[in-house]
Image: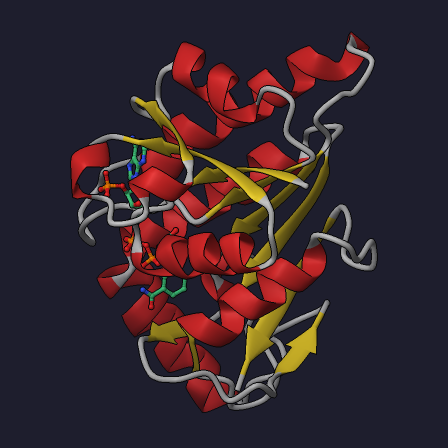
Length: 217
Ligand SMILES: NC(=O)c1ccc[n+]([C@@H]2O[C@H](COP(=O)([O-])OP(=O)(O)OC[C@H]3O[C@@H](n4cnc5c(N)ncnc54)[C@H](OP(=O)(O)O)[C@@H]3O)[C@@H](O)[C@H]2O)c1
C-alpha cells in the first residue's frame, strides 16, 4: 500500500506516519523542512509546500491513498487548507485518465466545518460553542475547515472528512463515538491517537466515502 501523506510533521501527522510504517505501508511525505522530521529516513520525502502544484503532484504520484493532517501553525488567518486542499484535489483529479487514478483521500477536518455539527447538543451548549468558540476564538480554523469541506464535496474524488472536536495529546481510549450527522451529545474532545487510529481504519473501509464523519469520546 502506497500512502501520500500531507502534514506528516504535525502532531496528528506524526502519529499517522508511525501507524503507516507499522502497517508496512510505503509513505511519501511532503515536508517543508525535512531536516526536522525524525522519521525522514523511513519515508520518501518530497520537499516543498502544499501550496505548490509540482511537489503536490510528486507526492500523490502512484499513491493508493492520500492522507492529510494539514493545518495552520496558529489560530490566525493562514489559509492553509484554502490553498493546499485545492492543489491536492486538482493533482488527484489530473490522474483520472491514468491506468491507476489516485481517487481516495482521507482528511483530518473539524467538527466546526458544518452548520449542522451542533444539532445534537443542548441549546445552551450550541449557543456557547457556536458564538464563543466557532465564531470568535476559532474563527479562522473553522473558515479553513469549511473551505476544505467545500473543496472536497465539490470534487469527484472518494473523500472522507474526519471531524473531531478539540484534539488532545493524551493516550487513546481505543473506544469513541462516531456519527455521520452531527457531533454526538456532549462530545467535546478526543485524543489525536484515537483520531489517527480511525483515519487508518478508513484506508480499507468504504463506509464513509464521500461523507464527513464526526468522532468524539
Ligand atoms: N487543535 C485542535 O483541537 C483541533 C480540533 C479539531 C480539528 N483540528 C484540525 O486539525 C488540523 C491540525 O492538526 P494537528 O494539530 O495535528 O496539526 P499541526 O500540528 O498543526 O500540524 C499541521 C501540519 O500542516 C503542515 N503544513 C502547514 N502548512 C503547510 C504547507 N504550506 N505545506 C506543507 N505542509 C504544511 C505543517 O507542516 P510544518 O511542520 O512544515 O509546519 C504540519 O505538518 C487542523 O486542520 C485543525 O483545523 C484541530
